[in-house]
Length: 108
Image 1 (tube, rainbow, N blue to C red):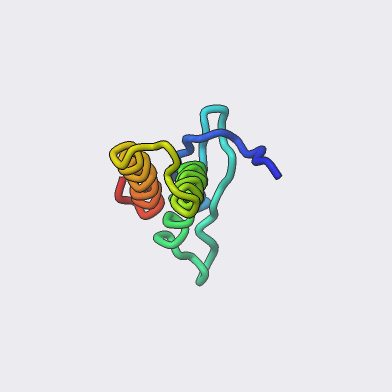
Image 2 (tube, helix red, strand yellow; image 1 turned 90 degrees about the horizontal axis):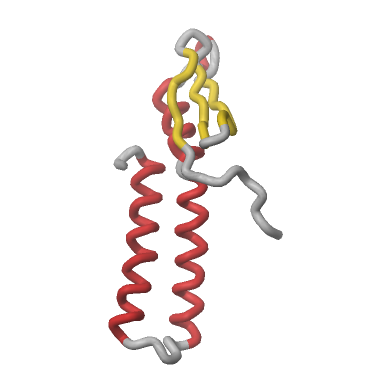
């Protein structure tokens, strides 16, 4: 199964404070929305966290794919790659994971 989602990067922002909406945006426009709720169910902070997580989805998916690739190589040996090449490869994927998680948690 191949992904057919809108390519990243995505971002988010509050687009309508009156209706408590956060939009998830890509280069081509809005790809999703999160509503903070109504009445007693209103939770602005949780809704913003949900929007932030959704906006980080493309980076999280890419990081997970890279991590899978790294783990598969580790499981089957590094082949002809040198120790330094392997470290650089693993470090790059670890950095992508850290950056994607930071975006999802608002630490970007």
